[in-house]
Amino acid sequence: MINLIGIILPLIVVIVIVIAISIMWPLIIGAAWSPSSKRVVDKMLDMAEVDSLDVLYDLGSGDGRIVAEAARKYRAIGIGIEADPLRVLWSRLKLRLLGLNRRTQIIWGDIFNQDINDATVVTVFLWQKTNEKLKEKLQMELKPGTRVVSHIWTFGGWTPLEVDREDRVYLYVIGESDY
Ligand SMILES: C[S@@+](CC[C@H](N)C(=O)[O-])C[C@H]1O[C@@H](n2cnc3c(N)ncnc32)[C@H](O)[C@@H]1O
Image (cartoon, rainbow, N blue to C red; front, side, top):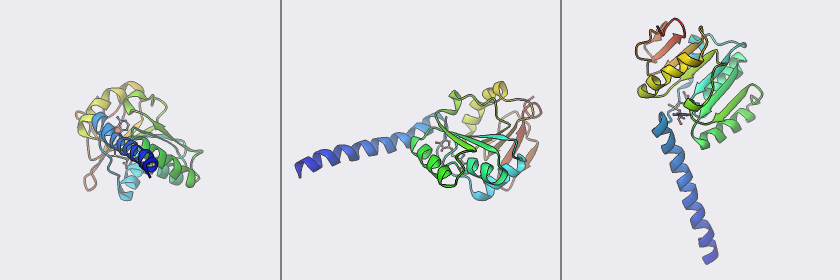
């Protein structure tokens, strides 16, 4: 009995700490988790005109739903970058179960520390301050013509080429929106 408590209690404490860090860490470095609805995912991919030649990065990929849909519906290469280790594990498992692991990848890490220069489409659903911090990286790394689609939050000073006011989806194109 004592042994059981001695093992289970520390295990529960460790699990609680891991979950707490998983939730807190993204809040500190970017944005909280809040999934885009299926309608918004479809709209973001549609506005970016994703096709099978695209390499799409979802920066802060959550449970991998945008990456999954880009690979499933459009046969694009989908790459997610996610800071929360539990969501990374979940999205990797989900993509494997959906049979999409050959066309997709989920990177565990901070979006600000990952190279994204092979992207042709970038999707984001972060926070305004994180978008502002991200602007320089996008301008430095992305090729002209790369589509950047943001849900809810804008890129201050950039001109969206298309706006969906109903769902607050903004399409930017590098070299055209960011002057
Ligand atoms: C609002 S959710 C969007 C999830 C997904 N893109 C979607 O649209 O359903 C934001 C996600 O970004 C992740 N995140 C926030 N800041 C990050 C950072 N600096 N690096 C990696 N992931 C980050 C959070 O953990 C969270 O899962």
